[in-house]
Image (tube, rainbow, N blue to C red):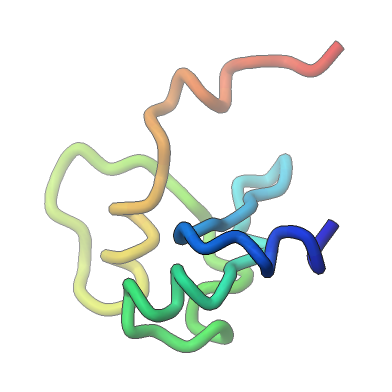
Length: 74
C-alpha cells in the first residue's frame, strides 16, 4: 500500500485510529517544506483557532474536520 501511495502525484497523508500521521508522500513534503520525521507520529487534531508555528501548525492545517473521525468502520 505504501508503494502505491508513494506514486500519487498529489500531496497525500494517512492517519491511524489514534489520529497520528503514519504516512506522507513526497508531494506533501514538497508542499509543506517539512521533513518526513517532522510529520510522522504527529497527532492530527482539528483546531479552530491559530495553531503554534512549525510542524504543529502544518499538521493542524492538514487535519480534516472532526466529523471525519466520528465515522465508524463496519
